[in-house]
Amino acid sequence: MNTKFFDALHAKPYLFRRLTTFSHEEFRTLAEKLEPEWREREYQRLRRKQRTNAVGQGRKYALKTFGNLLLAAILYLRTTIGYELLGLLLGIDQTTVKRVVKRVTPLLQDRFIPVTALTKRQKRTNNLDELLKDYPELTDVIFDGTELPIQRPKRRQKYAYSGKKKRHTKKSTVALDKRTRLFVGVSPPRKGRIHDKKQLEQTGWNQTLPASVQRWGDLGFVGMAGKEWRLPHKKPKGKKLSKRNKRANLAHSRERIVVEHGIRTLKVFRRVGELVKVKSDAVLYTLLSASANLANFKVLVRQGIG
Image (cartoon, rainbow, N blue to C red; front, side, top):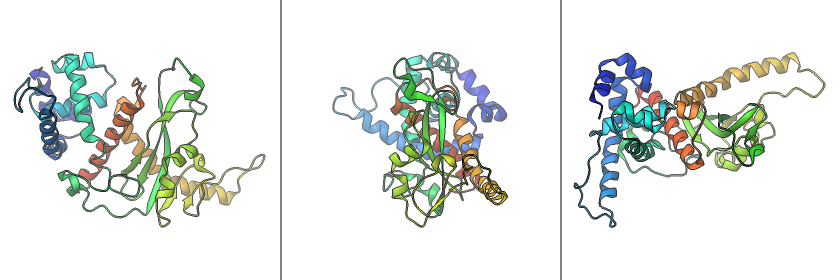
């Protein structure tokens, strides 16, 4: 382990925040919330029947503490560098970095997304509920599609080509609570050719939400059924929008802009915010969910919840 790197990072609060997006205090809170479940998962992994060594035996983690393991996973999400270079910075082998990321990121997948009609699970099995104890019922949800640029695929390129972005992408639909600005849903990624409306319909979220919840969207969701939808006016073909409709669209944009700010907090984790090199959709969905959960965590702790 490169102790000089960790010491220098912890000794400079400004640098620590620039690299991780967290202050020292926020990072310690995150580690404290996650460590009990990490220890439980490690205990279950080490006591599996196929393992010959007893619990406590075998090789230890080169990074030693859970805080260092979590920091390595966050640095992976925050950068686009490969395992080799990240391992060189941390003073460990590239396979060790890959193993750490694989085992730590699942802790971040669904811990800070509130339990709502959009989430499949009914309860949590860890002690993180306290962070969300003040979370109210949903009243307004803003939907938006976000595209993640990818390298040109070798096969079936046209299905990944986005006419809007003029490049090959993966697309995911996000749902944001309008009041608290928390992510309440992130859909699995699909090839960039899919339309926003079709992808949302495939998630089943619109049918799951009760009628009392207002849905907000942009022109990509024009045609969604239900009086609960709040959508901008679309310009008629060959005609112009009236001044009244333009004012209504401007007011709608001011209400909906929070989802664009939310997507920005997700994409500061450059592993999903810049050119995505992950081939597996399942792995990419894990990284997207982890990034959304870390964005939610920052909102929660900065609002004083927990």
